[in-house]
Length: 246
Image (cartoon, rainbow, N blue to C red; front, side):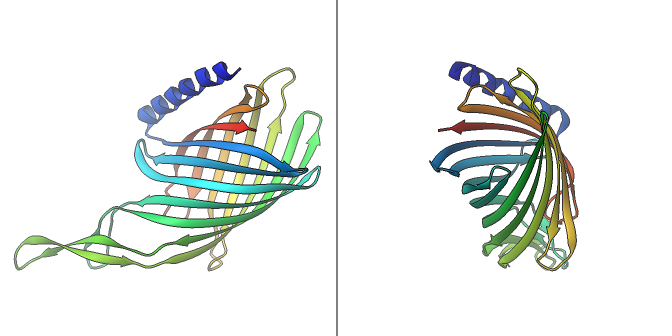
């Protein structure tokens, strides 16, 4: 079974890379390890890498979290992520250019998930509070000097930012009889509560999990993102994930 998972993973990666190259969509990849700590309590660690519009870097992240089952249908989760995100170059109001830079961010989240199983279909609703701190830094700024007709490089101070988000997700899984595939669909709304701007992003996802064995799970999905956030563009995403359970 382990050999099958090692064989399928590069095939999925090749498929995702081919689709990204052909259509110019984003590619999101992830790998997680989960393990039990006590009855009802489990933990996980994981890594993630994303691109946008083909192979343009978007971000990489390292995460760790805890899940606790309050009841058979109710789960409480807490997590932390370190994120390093690539911010594309942009123009200022004065006509200068701030170059592309990488900005570290710290994110913490708290979520409550409620699930209900009907025959072979499972409905789950997750409400998640998310806080993100954008660290301050200096980025290169390029300005045109009319006197010397040359480009001058200066430093632009990027101020720290605090963002509070409420994410609401509804997910539906279907357990196919005598199959290792579990297809799913989900919809998620991001509400920006920092300044009470209302919803800032919507994600619609369709995909499937493939249970190689009790310890190894592969997943692939397609996602469409509709964003009102200046930092996130609308777009199509292909995702590939791997999960190992201890």
